[in-house]
Image (cartoon, rainbow, N blue to C red; front, top):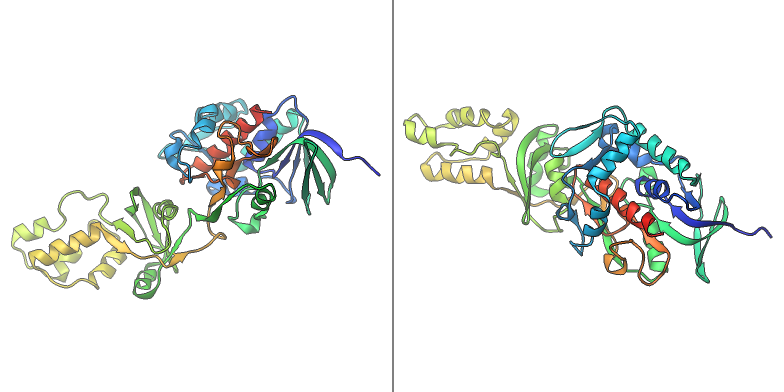
Length: 388
């Protein structure tokens, strides 16, 4: 009987977190097992194919977790600036697009190739198509059986990601492993996901394809970016951001006049001009896309001062009641995951199982849109690798 091949650490998952862990754990024998036929599939589609690889403003406030302070330690150990230096050492040109979002100039493939080169340079081994993985823990070692063979190590690093975008191979295996070892799970849910409108509010889906600059509010959070109407509801950066903070039954509030601070109908009220639909349309066309203005006017009645005041208030606090979201298949990330109460914030190691680490999206730390989730992958991976 062949003995299992032995390593210092076995990493499950060759995505962003898993590959940077392998690249960072220099001097250690590291094996990366990936169940897909290629590494980094999610990296390649990120940022429109150019990888929004970090955000220079990344801090714990940009993340959702049952423990809002948990991300602080890892983010401090390896910052956005540290990753930019990593990119620059790899001679990958980059640019800031907006709001601190950093992208590769050319292609996300450049980023993936750099991670693979660095992991290989650190001596890590990568095995693809490693399926039917089963893990046991005995006498301080993890025994990993798979279709690719049997392996053992003193450390097991779970970097399997979340449930979002199943067509790229996303599974709940990381949560299954956590439960196997007695760790708790915060119920996973789609995040950064388009929202659905139903009932009377499905009226707005006729505007599919139209976008507008808005401020979307969910609870105490608000996001000033674009909103996009879809055939099923709403999307666009502002809506994706807000979706992560909405619970079932919550209302979504949208300021359609985000760029117009002055009272909208004041000129009409003061001028003494005729107040009719034509006058309102001229004012709305100046500040809103015409199709949106027409749809809003079709539902408005009255031209008195009070009616105009109420109309403007509705435009600044347009309230909708999403009936749900488009699910994990359209979600950019997964919220929830391995409960941070069961992990050390400095090392990402499970407190009850020495040598068992969870990094990246599988953990209950979810970033806002704009490079924050990549930065959590980098920071958590480096924190774990440095603790080996």
